[in-house]
Image: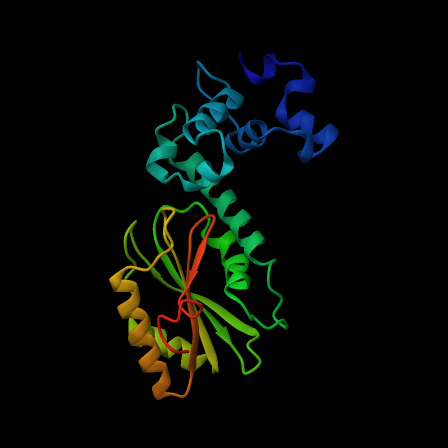
Length: 228
């Protein structure tokens, strides 16, 4: 059945105009982004197929890559890009919220809350740094590496340049593990030691390296893996 054959109360766009976005299901909201379906499925049915591929959850949808999204009949590159753009805007909105710039970061839990919206549900590793002033308030946040499911390459020279350019007094490194285990690998430990030693040369403190998953975190400082 085509969208135009549905009653007005069942058409996503008309429903949103009348009742607001909150009245729509996830599938209906996605259907508005898709705009059209196929000769066999309307946009709502196409959206529901995509959600089924994602396990019925938005977190699963956020984890899908371009190839997976385009595997759904009726979704090609242009529609996939629209979906990915909308999801990225959602990530950026959420990542603006948790920690105010004037509030000191005093625990790995605060780091977890700060970074989870940015890193939740992605299926590759990303490495970030939080740049802090003398009072340990955040003055900046930078992504310094994007990797695969098991590792993230980090250019130490570029990392140090960013830290020095921002005139940070202290730094917290953060990266995610796509699985459920936040414990560090030997490569994670070596990278942390290298950064710790490099920053000491400039009188800058590495306060912590926090590894996060969707539901847990590991703090190098709390576990005393190195002396901050």
